[in-house]
Image (cartoon, rainbow, N blue to C red):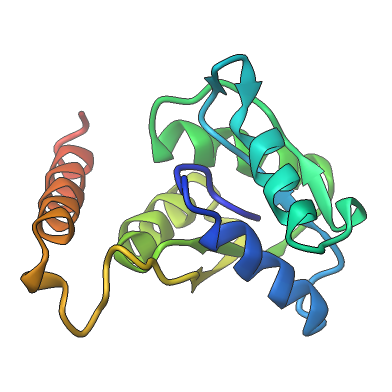
Length: 151
């Protein structure tokens, strides 16, 4: 499953690579909502198709969400409906720890495996050199603390 929130396409293309490598037959593509009248999952799949991927690789899963927690809640319910017990969560490198924790909390009976898609704007070996990367890390820490205190 591909988490929403990546506006550059790394997550959806990483999911496609995993499909080609035989890790999954399809990817459930979620997203947070509508951007200029289009749902994020539609934009993600269209992006992958423009990059040569088959639309049959993806299952669009549009729903409104304002947080990773809300997204996990909806996705876990959908996975249970589909009788999925083990799944891959594809997200950005800076988001793997928190996303994994949230998905394990939301579906303790399921087995998520978190996969990093990488992020061109968050180089793991030099993030501290870039203002946007530092802001991303700070934001991720804030969200981690907010989750810990139930916000």
